[in-house]
Amino acid sequence: MTTHFVPDNLPSHLQHYIGGKFVDSLAGETFEVLDPVSNQTYATAAAGQTEDVDLAVAAARDAFVNGPWPKMKPRERSRVLHKIADIIESRDDELALLESFDSGLPIKQAKGQARRAAENFRFFADLVVAQHDTALKVPGSQLNYVNRKPIGVAALITPWNVPFMQESWKLAPAIATGNTVVMKPASYTPLSAALWPEIFEEAGLPEGVFNLVFGSGGVAGDYLVKHPDVPIVSFTGDSSTGATISTAAAPQFKSLSLELGGKSPAIVFADADVEAALDATVFGVFSLNGERCTAGSRVLVQREIYDDFVARFAERAKNIVVGLPSDPATEVGSLVHPNHFDKVMSYIEIGKSEGRLLAGGGRAEGFPTGNYVAPTVFADVAPDARIFQEEIFGPVVAITPFDTDEEALALANNTKYGLAAYVWTNDLKRAHNFAHAIESGMVWLNSNNVRDLRTPFGGVKASGLGREGGYRSIDFYTTQQSVQITLNDAHTPKFGVQSSRETGDA
Ligand code: NDP
Image (cartoon, rainbow, N blue to C red; front, side, top):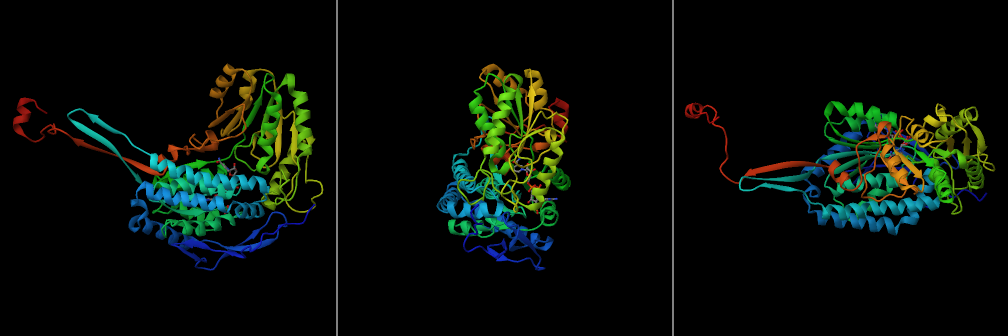
């Protein structure tokens, strides 16, 4: 094992960014940030309290009401967003190094995510320029049109699994449409979030449009969600947190987008291109350390090919390169935090009595410290098993056999989640019929998780509420006011006029 890599010039303290200034919490509160390889504190971060959130919301509100951003032409905003994308692209190596160091993601995959973050800005920069709305005419009598407007201060609350990319996924459409934002990133991984202020300043984003508050979800996050000057909340994270946020936002009827957990099935029929299915299902559950909301963490395999498929899957899992996140050869790195490591390990222990252990089953060999989990494969897992039903969010897969299409569908739909699904078959009719019957927000047919940014992203059941992606993000971050004008004399019944009553005009 090569030695632990620590990036140069690592900050030892991270501050909030409010109204264009780096500041500490008013009360001076901080929390410690660990790196997942040494599990040692490498920095402190300001821990936002309610008064810090008040300041951030006030700065964002001021920028929305008095600043230039919401009133700028889409092309002008688009130019700033393209500059943001350029800057991210030009710094993707540095960004990936910091992200990998803070989150434990393999460096190669962190780099891919950095590029995706740039693409999110480029995509929404283009989309707001192309955006158009409908005008409807009733010939000779009425014209109606849509006046689309930014809404105000958006609260963006993000998770730790691919932090910078997740943040870009919310930031880009929120600001492209003219809103101002307060972002509260996940406390396990604040490092890459601290890069945004410099990127935005360099790109020329006006002061106050972007505000950043670090701090605990239960304190800063909760207060931000309930803040009366915050009309929009976009949240990605755990389903139970999503339920709490939903309840907190409800009394004020806030616009809410919830992207939550998953336990997505990958269904492999005997007629599939088995080699391609094997590549994709192994990658689908073990990439990003298995800390992926759309991970295909339940693999359902048709009986005819089951034994062979399972044996080959397990062989692949055993050969996966677990290693230092900074090593380009690493395929699975270190899980984000010791608490999460403990959670994943406890599921592995549960799995030992629920399935047949074929690979992994504990700490990765050769890694006595750090949050390294060996890619773990359980076969013959029954549908009522906890490892079949519950999101583990780590490199652990449950494999289950099926005989018929009906059985496969019942198994696929047999969890509270409904985020993604992957279907492998060479039968076109089966592929589409099966896809339509699956209870999930997204389905990939004969494909690994490759996303076109124009498509809707989101889940059903406990996997979320609302859709973002393409113009759906534009819809979420804007309000559509309908304006109508009469082109002729207004035909209004004359209430309170005696003569009209007599003629029956009303
Ligand atoms: P959490 O729900 O624990 O946290 C997500 C964010 O919410 C963090 O910033 C957290 O702050 C904050 N938060 C926690 N409690 C509250 C609260 N009461 N009010 C407001 N904010 C709060 O999720 P994780 O960070 O553990 O992320 C993992 C989860 O995210 C997994 O379940 C995964 O499936 C899901 N996920 C879903 C995706 C999707 O698109 N569907 C994509 C990626 C992940 P703090 O960090 O301080 O606790």
